[in-house]
Length: 131
Image (cartoon, rainbow, N blue to C red):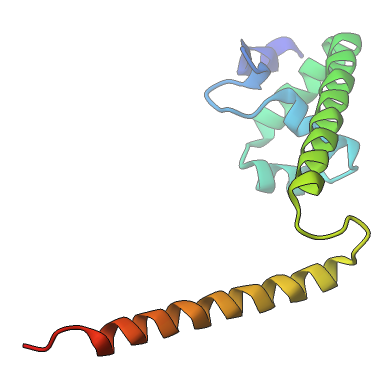
């Protein structure tokens, strides 16, 4: 069943479906989520042959692929925590404020900014020189 393996190529991002930017690890996200074949093919826009190649590659390189996948997940979680910390530090809202309350305050601020801009535009348009 090694006929599918040429459809997988090594890239700087890791093993990928040849001719695409789709990595084996991207497909693994869906496989680990127990999504069915048709859903994976539809979302990833891949063929049966390409999906079979990924599955074959994973089977033949199970330990290496699983180890690298876990490393990618850890790195993703580290980045997520890092950017959440930055967002929290820069946010004008207290971290324990409910999200709906934050959204309501942001909508209010946007509306106030629009009103201020409109008033400025109206003032500018009425006080300028007339031909």
